[in-house]
Image (cartoon, rainbow, N blue to C red; front, side):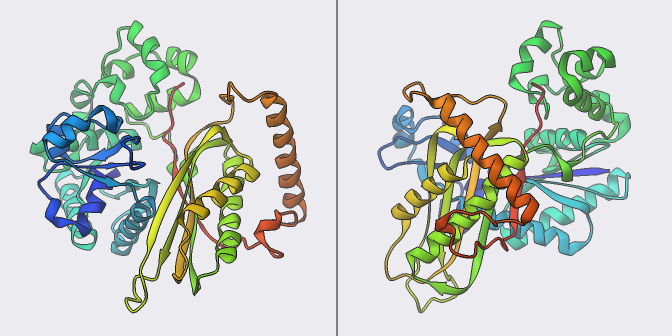
Length: 417
C-alpha cells in the first residue's frame, strides 16, 4: 500500500526542539518584521485553542496574543529544511519503505509491500517512534491504495485522536471513509473548482468518485481525472515526476569556512541561478526569495551566528537577474563581519504557474519588459543547453560558475483548476 507521513505543526515542532520549556503553551511561527507586520505561518494546538489561525495578520490578533501570553517565534526556513532532510535520512536507513520521496518540507510519500492493516499499523508505529526519537518531531501517518487515499487517511489520523496518529484505509473501508471527507479537503481539488463542484451537489469525496468518468474529464481535465481515479483506488499519480515543485532550495555546507562577503555572494548567486533555471524548467514563477547563512555549530570555540531573511517580489518571476538582485539585497541585510560561515543557501517559494503573471499596476511598460527578459532567459538557457551549463553566466557568479551543488526540491501539490 501507499503511505503518507505528515509532520504535525511542523514549523512550531521544529522550534520547540530547542525550546522545550514552551511545550504545552500557545506558540506561533510568523514572518514578523518587528512591527507586527507579518502573518502567522504555523501554530500549535494550544494556539489554535485560543482562536488563532494560520494566515492571521499579527496586527489583527495582537490582543489575543497578549491576552493568552502567546509566544511568537520568527520563521527559520533553513532549520525546517535541515530537520526535513534528517527525517528523510532516518526513514531511508530503516529500508522499510520503498520509493520514499519528499513531497514538501513536511510531507513524505512511499510504499510498503504489505496490505494487511495490522502489520501496516505496526510498521507505521515503528516509523513514528523512530522519527520522534531521532528528531523529536511528531508525525501522522496514513496508508491507502493510492497516494491520494493515503493522504486522505492521514487527514483522518490528524482529525480524530482515537486513531493515535495512524489511519489505514483498506479497500473495504474506502467508501465509508470518503463519505466523511468534505470535497474541499481532498488533495488535488483546487479552490477555483469548488464552485463548479458545489453546483453539481458534490459535497464529499465519495460524491466526487460517483460522477461519470467522462464528465470529470470534461470539467476538470487530466488532472481532475487523476484525482478521480486515485479516490477510486486506481493509482494515477507518480510523485517522483510530479508536474511542479512547491519550493526549490539550493544550498551547500562549505568545505572551508569563509568570512568573505564576496565569496558568499558568488556562491549564493550560483545557487540562485541554478534554482531559477529549475524554476523555468518546470514552468513556474517565484514570488518569494529566502537566503540563509550559518556558522559551524560544531565549532563552539568560534562565535555563532545563523539567520535567514525573505523578500517578497512585486511580480512573480523566473528571471535570474531579478532573483540575483533579491539575493544581493538579502545578503546585505544578513551579513555580519567577523563570523566564519560554514553554510549558505537560497530558497525560492510561493511558486505559481507561468501561464499568467500579475503585473505591477504602477510600473509602466512592464509587459514589454517581461517579454524582453523572457527572450533573454530563453537565449541563455538555449546556449547553455547546447554547449554546457554556465557557458554563459552572470559576472557575480565568478569566472568559473560553480554548478556542483545538489538541489533539494519540494513538490507542489497538484490542483484541479
